[in-house]
Length: 477
Ligand SMILES: Nc1ncnc2c1ncn2[C@@H]1O[C@H](COP(=O)(O)OP(=O)(O)OP(=O)(O)O)[C@@H](O)[C@H]1O
Ligand SMILES: [Mg+2]
Image (cartoon, rainbow, N blue to C red; front, side, top):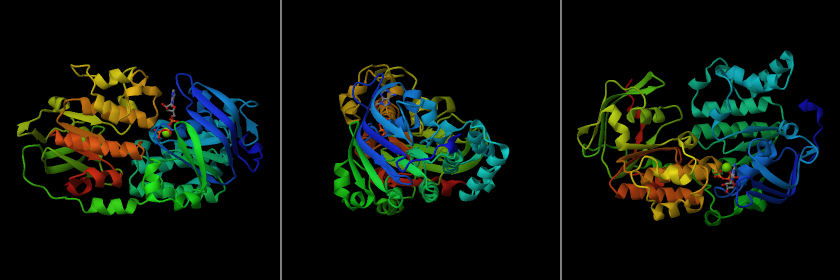
């Protein structure tokens, strides 16, 4: 069906386009004029909550298909427009890749996941086999075809998500922060895949905070601010702007390499200070299975410790085992010299997950912030720092990704735990918020807490960490 449409030279065109969500106070996305040429790559940048994902959702039909909202103006996808075609029909012209690949998988095995979009479109078995051969070859996925999805690392999952979207055979593909949870190798892999897709003539629209890896792929950049597309730059013009200008616009650095070098220089030694956390003969588990052993780790309080290591090296599993959420049977965990039994650990430790959506349990932001606390008092300073004051009455699921992340980080700051573990907290944050987060982590440290920071974000690690622990180097079996 998809191939019946002959694309015009302008696959995406918007005029006086306006979106207001059903529960939104202000316009979430406003685009006066946007014309994208076939085969071009447009990058959407701008602070959190500025309307980037909303534009992607208009293009892939999630609005109004999934999220309800009022749409004005015109939006054309290929030769179809909102006024003339059904949402399903428009949406079938666009393949989507999201920040967290797990949210878009339907099957347990890589091969099934790849062929699913084609089966769904009613393609013949021989056409599916042909497309599968092309896509697996282009993205070098042959060794993974038989693997169960859950056995893949974050970077490998994202590669499958991109390949699976490519299997749909659409000319237009949209990506919402596709590298947010990936390490440097994972980012490189996504970069290669995007380049290959561009060479195949696909039209790509990518919303991102991490901009450095896109500089050789992007043809133009759209800058969003407070729900409006404010500037549209050709790539050379945007790339020529100084670091200082980017900072003013709230955009992340283009110079990741210098931050990576600073992380390399951070302290990696241990002192035998038992006034904080001590972990001995500790088995790290993942989904009930034993992964590896950590012999001895001593971390003093009043510091921020970066937990680093490639995607799949077991950082999150370490955090979950430490929290007592996974089954360690042999090891000892002490805090200030006292043994912390498994069931007592959650009383001492707070955890901010990589996918914060899984942690949102109440129906109001305000409730989420006071959950599990005796007092319902909110700290104005924290609310202000995380720009949550205006969002207190909102449903947490109606917030943008960055807003949700800020909410959970603020909730952990307000809790009275001694050890706070953050799992990739800056993945959905813009520059200003990343800087705010760095300040807040320093504040936690000053209050005597031990902050464990699992992150691939070299800029954040370099700014806040006193010490770095490479999980890959600590494993003993
Ligand atoms: N389903 C929804 N219902 C109501 N308001 C929403 C919904 N989704 C997003 N919004 C609001 O619309 C505005 C734009 O959000 P959007 O998700 O497009 O931002 P973004 O630029 O992608 O941000 P981020 O960088 O944090 O992902 C925000 O004010 C957000 O709170
Ligand atoms: Mg977004």
